[in-house]
Image 1: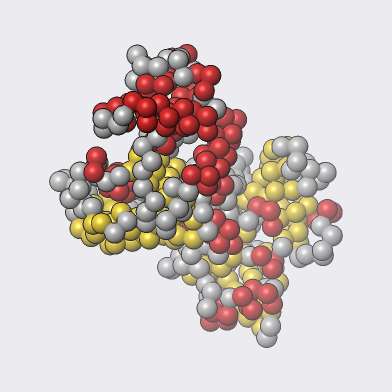
Image 2: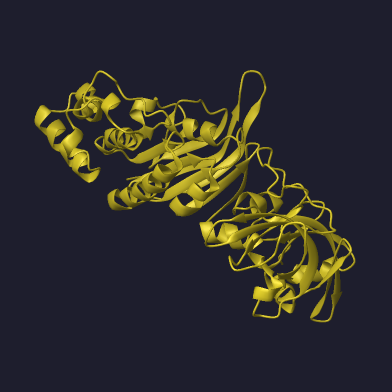
Length: 386
């Protein structure tokens, strides 16, 4: 097992494109760290630099106690799992799993022992004589995992390994991979563009944008205390609703002006975000999570309300996604891949109780959990805390 340390690592390509900017990460022994971000943010480049498949322009990379900037991939003691499985179609599952050991001239008896142990862990024992073409997508991904496991590496590197699977199988496989990593206790760096994967699998999650590290923290802290507007909108599905707003502070409370609407500023917000007192009369970015909206008729806590026109309902059984229009200017999250979560003329989306009776085309009274609001500096887009 080993730590993986990136210290001010940069990657600049020959054409001058600066893909990674001063990336510093300290990945602990046995930790499962997820790199997440939109397309082109640099997450796969960072992973390939750890693997040695991309050179490092500046900075230092360490695996264990060893600086590996100029160490060949085969000598880094890592195992990589790719998006496309990269299995040999003419070889059996047994031979695919054991191929790297065979190349390393490991004794046949040890190869057999390691392959069969990996197959047992991955429930592949009955498939050892089959070819990859005879397996399902999930089974092929398990074979790719088995090939990594038998090498007993210092670290696993996984580059979007589940992106070729259907939605149901992805849910199953992400649980299996997370469970397997904890069982084996191998330091793992996992790349995905799917923030749900990142949140459900990682001990910590590192969010990248345009080659810059935005925030690295536990999944819950990323959700509860996003460092900036980008992280706030990227983490969570549907995305956080972001609006231009103006704050007025009065004693232990105040008001929030949101277009033509007014919400009371909760004393909780001022207690948890003392710096918000410095923004009296100033424009801010206001963030409201979809679950902090509710049909006022279903709200039992007496939260303040706003009026809105409902444009679309998405009934999901356990909840309803309600798209609605409020008179407030929306703020761009800065995610180039993000489709606007609101649709059909709406600029907001809420997660309502499935028993709600709101209807498209009609006005609705919507409760807002104002103690859970998020605030960001309008110019810097950084979270307002202390």
